[in-house]
Length: 224
Image 1 (tube, rainbow, N blue to C red):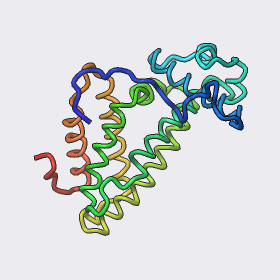
Image 2: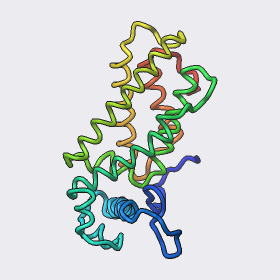
Image 3: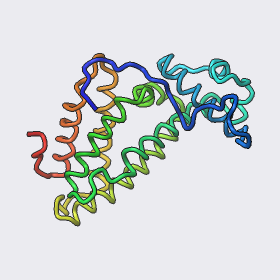
Image 4: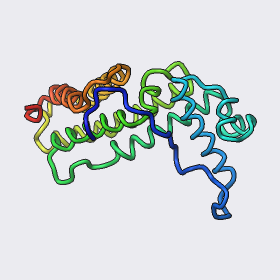
């Protein structure tokens, strides 16, 4: 991904597979199709209206009834939470649940993961909305708390692996170290995405990695 210094053009927001259109093979689950269309529409509305969403607007964009939105998601907050859940599913699939540099040592792997995290957030239209505009929704707060706990759990094992490999001092508490790393990553991304123009993403990734390397008490030779 190339560096940008201006706000990227918005691309079509997609959650899951494309909506069903005439001519699609028979046998598709109508309920799953309707739910997917509502999620896609809700994501698009959130981006277009900078975090604001009304059920009626989502239903109109999806070409479905307002009642179906309540049927599948229970409330406006439930629908927004489902969109956020899908956002983090994509993030985990592309960044957290992969080995970004097989066969490499901890520092190289995690340096690459930071680059991937920045790339993901810079190209995702929903990222600035999820990171800064939806925290007041109780359902969203519950999703974010659960997903953060999962990330910290994965990261704790990851740091422990770095300690076992001899790269990270064993004196560090892996859980606390990861909590500080993730908190800093989230805050830095939120600040960067809120700016116009956005900071150069390669430089942002270097600065985030420098902070993570300092927390892990390892040499930061990759920024030179």
